[in-house]
Image (cartoon, rainbow, N blue to C red; front, side, top):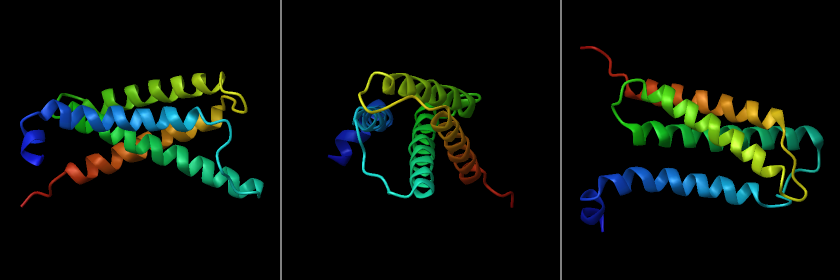
Length: 126
């Protein structure tokens, strides 16, 4: 299986991005996700989940784009566009509403994820 995947690099690169976007779409389509009863804990968990989901998406995008010039910028824009479409999608899901705070958390998560990716890619000079 591993050899089969190595001979199909586009599949190895694109499948994780598409699958992660599918997971985000699936979770956004749920009318009610489990959440803490306390308002501050709910806000913390929700914001953290948004940041994490879109940090991973941004890293998957930059990984897929590879060594292209300014791949991180393209990855950020694509991630933010998907975050915007996610909030738009939630406007049509019963029990869900679009929330600018979620969009802010998505963007912050994307930026943090990309900063982490760039930091891991930098090799110290000998």
